[in-house]
Image 1: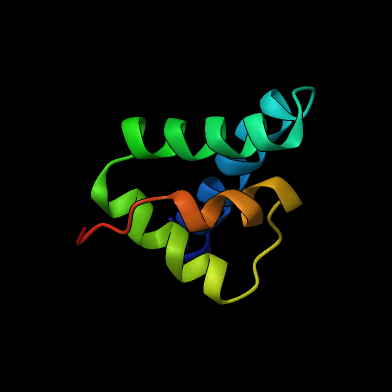
Image 2: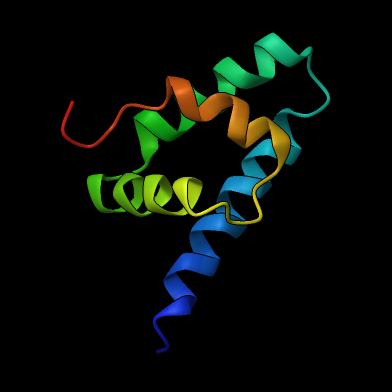
Length: 75
């Protein structure tokens, strides 16, 4: 498996979550996205998520807004 495959999977999964919440009011969507990631993504996934957010990967705008409420793995 290439090194980019897990990264692409994280981006794809995050964007799918954003699309699910996109029909809700923005504040509710942002909180729902962060809550989902905090509850269901393991430490390694959130670690990769933050690496990708900082490298300006192709995330849905709602994911970028929710990233401030996602718990860092060391929190």
